Image 1 (cartoon, rainbow, N blue to C red):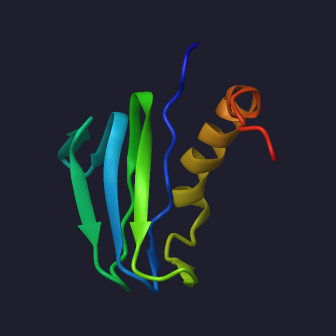
Image 2 (spheres, helix red, strand yellow):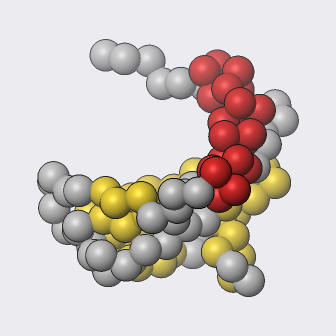
Length: 101
């Protein structure tokens, strides 16, 4: 299966988040995080990342069961690569969607 790169818009959450990379890579600026790496994002801190060339699978822990999300990337120029990635990955993501129980 070929996985394409996915990109998250710059955003923040109202709860602290801890991430653990299960497989693949996350690119955050000049940092590359791989399997076994993790990172912490304090509540209210904006961040974004791009999945590596083979995608990424993360385990996400939050300090609250309910939270708000604020998207800070609001220009068409910032959303264009995000939308292109979503369109390019649409079939792959649909094929690997977990079954609803």
